[in-house]
Length: 315
Image (cartoon, rainbow, N blue to C red; front, side, top):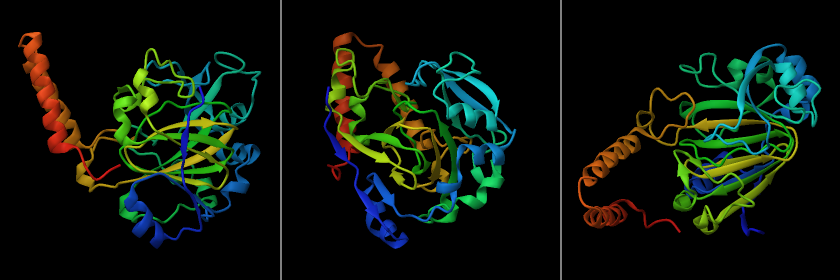
């Protein structure tokens, strides 16, 4: 099925002032071109990364299929020296492998102690710090993490949302990114922060009939492009080539709104988590009524939520 997509706007030479005052408040995805990212876009070749990253051991996702699914966990975690990971991820076929000769690799860098420390490429890979410049489009105190990512060609990550704003810096290689508005969450068949629909280009509409109603926003990223992904926007990322990227996450809300134990930046704000718990208790209370009553009062609750909480300021 050919899907109609809304192109994500591309702008070149955007200044910090222009972004903060005019673009950021719109809360929509945007590809920024011509941002000074340092020497990384030319230096971070397979040979260079293998040499500089060295034998540092990293935990990676390894999958026998291209479409990775975090709900069913159709992958395994394995540990590799960083130089071996880079070399294998750049290959189409492997002489050394865990599952199969065409297995896919995905690195999402972690803090030294993932339970306590956030990912920051400047700390986990200090020899690479001088090569990359972060876009200075947010206040330093808003910074949360910088996540180093490496993907095999053809790898597709599951559709999900993050609770913080995000710059996806495409350092090398090419990616295709499909995004969905938070207002279309009802069509994405969510399990937590993730969509159950894996194959977004050829979905099973018998199983997921509402998915066709979700509006698709799409862009292609090349080396040097920076994609702004606002918090709560769903995104699905396909690596068209071996590629290296860095995500910069920062806090859009005051710090006290976020879960202090969250080192990945993917736990819902504490107020949202409390509201979900209250709703669960309300639904358990309704379970004590006969089906006809339960259905009626559940629908009244939905109408009440729409009236009190839905925004009328979005398209």
